Every structure is written in C-alpha cells, then in structure tokens.
Image (tube, rainbow, N blue to C red; front, top):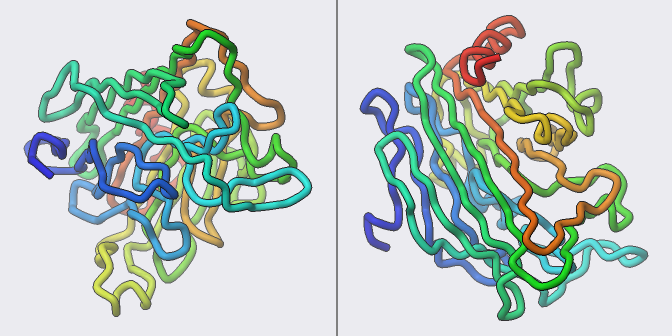
Length: 299
C-alpha cells in the first residue's frame, strides 16, 4: 500500500489519525475505507481494527448492514425469523479519488458496489480541528446519493426483527480495555439509559488501559491515559437519528439511520449526515464535555 493510500490527519503538527482508502480485506468484512488508528493529542489510541470480538469493526467510518438486502457492515446478516445468517451478500465501498487533501482533512469520493452494480455514490468530508491543548475534533460528513434507476432502502437488524440492534451509519469502534467505558449524555447515564435515545451529544469515557489479553498479545491498544470521546450530531437530520451504543459487550458508538423503519432513498436523492467527535485526553465531566461540543460544533 502506498503512502498516497493512507493520508495522515494532523492537528497542531501532531498525527492523530490515519485514513486507509484501499484496505485488503476479505469480502465477508465488507471492505471499506476507514480511519485507524485515531489517537488523542497525547497519543492514546481510541479506535480498534478488526478486534477478535467483531472482525468487521474497522476503526471509524460508515457501515450499513442492509442496503436493499446488501450487507455493507460485514459479518453475518440478520434474517427475520432465522437470526444472524452467513450470506453471500456483502458489498464494498471503493475509494475513487480525493477532491481535496490537506494535513488537517480531505474530501473523498467513493462508490458503494454490490453484486457487480453501483448502488450509492458517496462524498466524504473529514476535518481535524484543535480545540485545546488536550482535545481536538473530528468532523465527519457523508453524503450518499442513489445512482440507480429505482428506489433503494436502508435497513438494520432492528427493522428486520432484532430489537435493540438499529445500527448502521456513522460508526466508531472504540478501544478495548479491561473495564467498560462510562457512557453519558447531558441528562442520562449508562448504556441502558442512553442506547436508542436522541441526544445532542453522547460521551464515552475510558480508562486508558488495554484488556489484559490484548496487552499480552501485543495488540494495538497500548496503555495510555484516560480518554473521552464526545459525539454530536451537527445537523438537524443527524440529531434526529437515535444513538446506537455498546459498552459492556464491546465499546462502540454509532448513528441509527434505520431505527424503527427502513429509510428510503429515491433515485437521484441524497441523504447527508454530519457527526463531530471531540477526542480528549482525560475523563471529562458533563460540563467539560458540553463546553467542548459547543466549541467544536458552534452551538
């Protein structure tokens, strides 16, 4: 893989993220561009790549388990009345070009292809901005356009019959650690209280120590200081999407494009979502998280 394929995001001259455009992955993992590793300004890694518990979790990116029956998430597909099922239905996101590349961000074009046909065309805009000496923001916007001659619909395991599993959209697989991270919003606390709710922002706060099994195996989640990720929907449409949250089973946060109903995308129509994530050293309190979100999003 050439250096051109893996631009590095920098904040105040420090590398904070690597973007892999053309990963060499098996079809079952729904190959797609991703950001990994993403780090705090002090260098603590806050993403995972293909962890043992979910090999198809690829750092930070966009993953959708059901686009008109095609799996752009990876792994098994949830089939109504059958459960998780191995199917030969995986699609791939193919990087085609950078429209813009700077040390602090880029604009990329992608094609979503399945069964030999292009279904969606994506424009992805990513920017890294310094907030303080200990925090920066990852601004991630994706626009998906239906380039087929007919309607498409986006679904999730939840819309296919699996309650509580409305994942699909922006997704951040956080680092594995010995203890589960804390989860909180402005007025809720804990995975059970936050998962599936709408909130202006959601925080995941970890401890900075890897799980012992990964430390012993030389995994990428090296030890470091505590960390906090604060996710905020930066547009009205994004704020309408409930949050998908996991902490106890594995640490991850994403948006839910199809929470209770399938999301239609008509021919020529484009859906846009923008999530801004504060990446901070240390474990933030509510007031600190809210203040950084206001600075990052401008509201």
